Image 1 (cartoon, chains in turn green, cyan):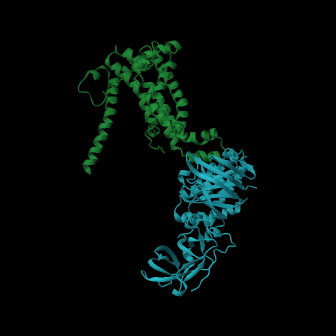
Image 2: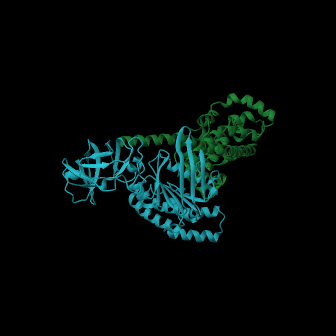
Image 3: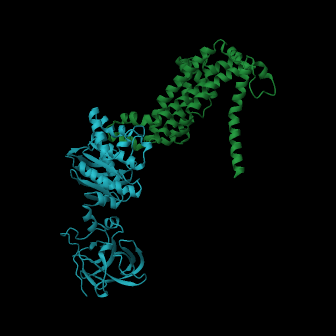
Length: 268
Length: 363
């Protein structure tokens, strides 16, 4: 029994370390300056003269702020598209019986099966023709394609968790079908939908390959840093990494409960 | 006026036939129980009346208005669901007032009605709590209050008590009956529990395999079942059925000679309730070999064999001397026997002035 417990705890420690140690090292490099980045072994705690000089140095790089803005723009659009397209699709999957529902469920995931690297060239050509190339809108469309499968499947499981009888009760007590959706189903699914939205935001915020390929001058933060930081000193790269990680970690931490429904575990 | 007329309703799901040409007439203010085993189509019928399911053919009229093609909200009814379906994101007060709010009632009326039904169902202390903070029984009361608040012409209930524990169910049953009697609402109540149906309803409609077997007052359905299915399903323990040969219009049962219904030949099924059999002298009864005796307090239930090994259950007074393994003699009470056709299971001569089969005892 104690052995099982020890293995269990060891597993948890390993999994936590797997996630936390890289984040910790990046943070250490970002605030420690040149000396910490190049020293070995690493100090366990940040140096006493904890300085944000490196961070400031990073944020002063020309174009960081504007590309951050493009990133936000693309991520917000991606979030909006994913919800507007994914939630109705999820509702249909959860409630309606239609031919090919199961196939559709798989097909939705299949959009993730094609590597962006293969799609990059035709997409670039297509986007140039449509005038979407090098715009945050174009990037957000690509990111929506990546985030949509999650949006569809998560919202489907959210709606499945809302008992059908609640909706039927709303119909019986005077609601039209859209009214019942707005008054009963949506409020119950809302926390999960908010989580899905933020997840879509994070997917877009973190995505680097498609963003690099589809933009030239209006690069999102990840794409911009990829091109700029390769020529920067190591500690500035760490600072850039930290700036990228923080929003994602914060958001995911905020919505972690809602995202559990992705695995079909009821979140209430 | 809200009488319900169900006219020739059939429902199929693919190749599965859930309901076959169902006709049912529920009078205004009547309490009708739809009784049947699970899968018999009773819930499907209720959902068709509510408009949550569409009939494959036939009509539903409520208060003289054909509602067959109307959505649920335009049918003027309320429903209590099996799992209550109380909205979890609304307080009890909002739940109870939901139907009125949707119907565009003004705030004063909503408040008045909410207070009235809350008092009726004893949920005033919980009005500002959320359903998650309530017990199953309290949620059940909220569901009933929500339905009664809109003063519906028709109230549909789908096994509303089946999720409650036995004691609470008994208590709610009595309460429902008095509350609904007061409201005077036409009620259709779906249940698979025959004691619930017997205790609550003005009339019972027994469904089996998508067909209505019998409609009538509880006492009549109990005393003269239309089919062997009804006899076996209504009443606990179920009715006994003995298959007996017919000779020259007579059936011999031990020392008894019974007149079988006119025209019967070959074999016939005799139906008799366990409590309608009484111990008798050998010359006045038929032999019964006792296998098991279960003293149940108010009576003893005997299980054994008779007439060539056919199973028979008998309920006798608690003071009756019984010897397991011994043979005793039984005699049916007058006028309590039902004749059934062995092939179709349908009762024979049931409607003859309440006199169930002619009976003549003799040696």
